[in-house]
Length: 479
Image (cartoon, rainbow, N blue to C red; front, side):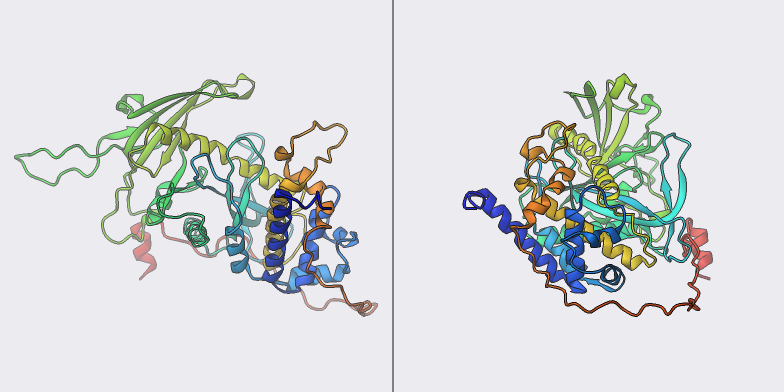
């Protein structure tokens, strides 16, 4: 035991114990049940097929009734747990920069008409034309990315989108709260590089950059290849005819190369999987905004949201497939060669969050419970977020308990699933604050022959608030 708890391993055990103690303090009702349920998720053999099966594990000392009571009537101080997650050691890129990724993953509930607050979630199919909309609960995740090829991310926040929410406004508020917690926890101090926020094509990147302009962040995201943006306005020249000077420069049509000026920066990088990656960057490129959609309620003159436009072209994809160019936009102006290369590299790292979604769904069983109320789904989601944090803290303590058909892996390259296999052995040496259950016997249950006389209400699926898209619709709605 002296060898086990010496040096860095001793500090890793202490850090894991401290987090478990803080997580237990965040559970304000049914805390013992929720804590043991988290341990059962981490110590189960194989994927979680059903939450009630977790009650058969030795780490879960309570009955199945306690499990349902914890999910339906438990309480978690989410604000306190968010602050605890922001204070954990976070991965950084070589220049000491934090990189955040934001994305939405749905909990599909197509067969739950008695569950409220369901929305139509966009689900991609295997073909381009196979996407469809399925009722469910969409959740917005914010996670810290790691450099290099990995399946690890550190989830910092989760927010469920409701029927009355504006997705862009909710995402902006969520990102602002995450960055403010990171600053309060000392993860960013003045003088350090700005925090990079990476989104996918579903976000209005320019709108997010404008809303978060007062924070030390750089917003990066893809732009559709059929967009039209504007170049910076030309220098002011005296015009004897008078008139107002132009606000925008010439059009920059992504699909028409003859409208492209000479790029400000050009880089060529050799990659392992994609051949040569060539980037062209133009500075101070911005969209021409109008009073529509997200900018409908903007007071005063519409702003100029300038940034760096990047065109990324690689030689080939996997299996020598042809690679179409990718357009990226960064809110940073005056970018250097290193800044341009960093933008497309962190964009590729954004897809590591997809590995986290696959792991929590297929292994930890995030969307497995058939809970009725969305509040129970929120508690189960935060339980899995705490489980992911514990797996990350146990990463330097785990051994490779590989299957005979699996390849050996270095200790610092274990996947979350492999770390989870040995968590039961690690749990024996860290803090377990849950109290011993008190035997109470079984409840009376429903009398034989009695029927449920209270019919569960049915809820419609979709948005309950229709927002105006034009000024005419906005004025008509205010009459």
